[in-house]
Length: 395
Image (cartoon, rainbow, N blue to C red; front, top):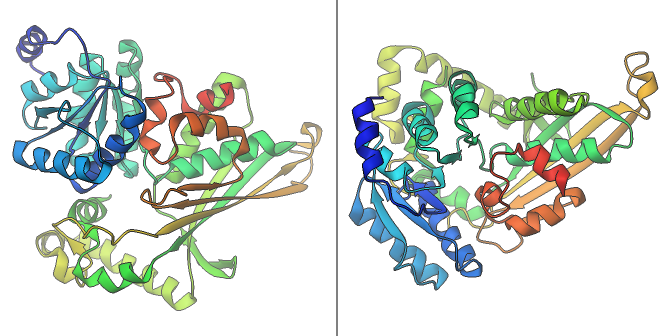
């Protein structure tokens, strides 16, 4: 990054930083984050935040909608103009924030400049990425840089991996022995309205673009299961490696699956995934997929935001199966002799019953942070800089 840009931005630094800046607030994910922030911040009047993005008019519209739905006065929420292609604007944004919450994807394409600028400006960074490649890039490229700057870079803080990570920690803390391995099964329950509206577009183009550019079947729970290609396993692995180095705690092996109601559906997904993978590796076909997403996805992918209410009542459920030993004496001498089952159920944010399950060891933590907004984990609890697992155990 040009040092002249850094020096120029430092001159404009404001004396008091905002607690949080939501970057990419006018996008689909950002819009819902702003709405949730508006609702939650009514209980935290001293919490200061801002929205950031390229288009002032769209940001103003997002704030108006959030104010209307939450019944909050958002006139004091600052609007910051920032663009990933404009280093000076990113510097200006990051120097106004204690923490930058990045909702601007695809993260492999747009995330690195925001991460680097946040570190240089001393602003903690959180994102809602679900891209494994981006997670690996951050680990390899920015880990040491963030450590030296004393900045926390916390990625994949959306639905994609948090339940899996917390679920494994819960099983470890409550296993009553030595946990060896965990298998999780993601079950998705789609409301009829979502199924009826799918041809009108329910998947954002940025998610489609990420999937196109991203460089077996068995039965359980009366459903057919396939390996889950998300970031869950990578995130759990990072946490387990941290627990090994910091606490000499035996790491648990983890495998994630996604389930389908019938074997026909499962094989249909395999076939569609194989075709999509092959097409994405051929330049001319990849260009076709990116230029005509609605046609290639039979109307499921859209450039626009899905209609409000389409995602209401959607539910995600994780069934987690752990195996291990009753005591540590027989580890590696005998096969695992104990099993335990856990469940995490999450509904969409708009329902008040957003979290239910048996994660008793994290209840106080989650009540303090307000589970409905997973992104608040690193903000309200004031544990910025600590690994999530360490913060949970300290409670």
